[in-house]
Image (tube, rainbow over all chains, first blue to last red):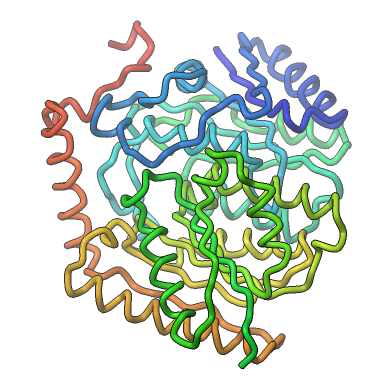
Length: 186
Length: 228
């Protein structure tokens, strides 16, 4: 079993170090082989919306930087845990670049999902379970609700937790999740 | 009507001439010009690529209203726009006089036909506005954004609706209204079935131009070796 942890070095606060350590502890205790990646400040180019990953080099971003490793390593894992600085109620710029450039892992075609909304289907039959753990100084209820909606309202494979300094609470929440591949869900 | 300073941000990362946000920003600027206002259009991509943020931020800090136009990426703001807005937040934090209570308008453009999918992104702009001292007035949520590059009659009709939405911004800015305002939804230029058909055909055509067959679009480069 493989697990992948992605974090944002631009927001390498004490909270992140604590959170990272506790996620690692939980995954280690469950016997996962864990790969960790910490994005350096402005490490990733931003997605340029060219759709080359769909029509030129299907499944791979045309920008050659560390994103190729991030996509490969996370997609080959059973669980991908993203430690996300919550900014304006969404993902920080660095993490958002990683998420925008995750679209090689879906197909360009339009489909209707169960709730009637449009979606791009999964490229792979097996996708890692995506767990987003949001953190930040004094996140408001509004910011947390927004972050949760963005991650879960329009997708079928996304679990949201928040880390607010209570290690035990987050550890229990993580422990209670089914940490296994999510099938063809994105 | 006193002359207001309006800043329009175009938040698409796409190359010049290819972004629907650029077209919408140009259209919005034209509407503001109808009453003699000379809005300033700032391309987020160009500003970041050329390292011209200081100048752009100074203009934003002096603006009487801010219009932020962007494509929806994974159900929220694209990374490039987040980078720009995060940097602006840092700029405002460093100089408190830049923190002014101005109206902010969000224009979110979605590649899916359903305009309401933009709702969270509009709320993110609301959080940004709050963080820099402004207040979100309302959002314009556009569905079927993939069609805005084509000047077909159904697109022109939606662009007219967009012009009306910008006129409402203009009136709202002039009045200084602070009472709650409702968002505006602009439906896809064509129905969902047609949008899907055209979109799916478009991907195959683009693939063919790149020497790819339909089957190639389903490649699985990151499939673990044992499952091949």
